[in-house]
Amino acid sequence: MGRLDGKVAIVTGAGSQTEGIGNGRAAAILFAREGAKVLLVDRVAERAEETAHQLQAEGLQDTGAVFQADVTDAAQCRAMVEEAVGRWGKLDILQNNVGIGARAGTILDMDDAVWERMMRVNVTGMMLAAKAAIPAMKANGGAIVNISSIAAWLPRGLTAYATSKGAVEALTRGLAADHARDRIRVNCIEPGPVFTPMVQVAGMTDELREARRRASPLGLEGTAWDIAYASLYLASGEARYVTGVVLPVDGGVLLTSR
Image (cartoon, rainbow, N blue to C red; front, side):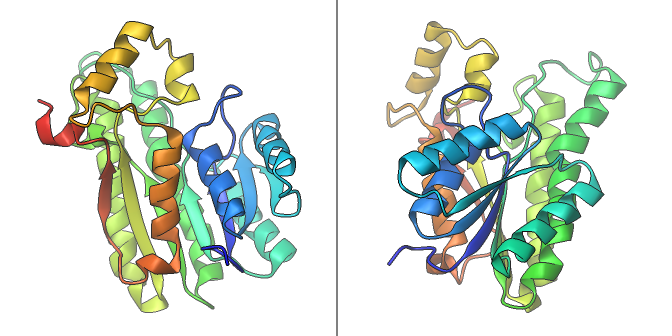
């Protein structure tokens, strides 16, 4: 028995910017391995299709379906939920993974358009996805997992990004309180400095990658699979008594970093 047998999940940001494994792709693959039907949602269809190909390579071709959508658009969020419910009859899990990367600088350096875009993608997109998903989850209950960042606690010159990730955590607690009566659990993961295609594309050097590894008291480099396994727990029935939680998955970086 898989840990998500019989469940239907939507994973937003289910593709990756390169052939590697990002947080959304890892979650989608792991959810499918554990028995869920997964709607692979991405703004760029080709990225989600590569995730679908990886599922097929593992013999999981009947578990995933690609859906192209921009989660900053309310109508497209409603359409992705309708697709999942129309295809599989219900919706149990929403993995809110979409986000854009950090922009260095204080608010004095920040262009207004950059600020607005950061909030629209990183916060409003999660709100719109949840707003579309919650009515479909009310029949049977469900689980929402939002992806934030330890930058919410360690801004370090990334004020716009950190503010957006702090808002994700506040959104998580608000949704958890509002919809507990509907048997919908809402939790949040704070990834630490994990190595994913997003940071690779942003120009991660070998030296900086090694420095990030050393920042962990465990001496480990985090990967998207670390985030995915935490997501799996929070999405599964094993976490039935867990809601409104913000879970750092950071190798202990928050314990020691300034």
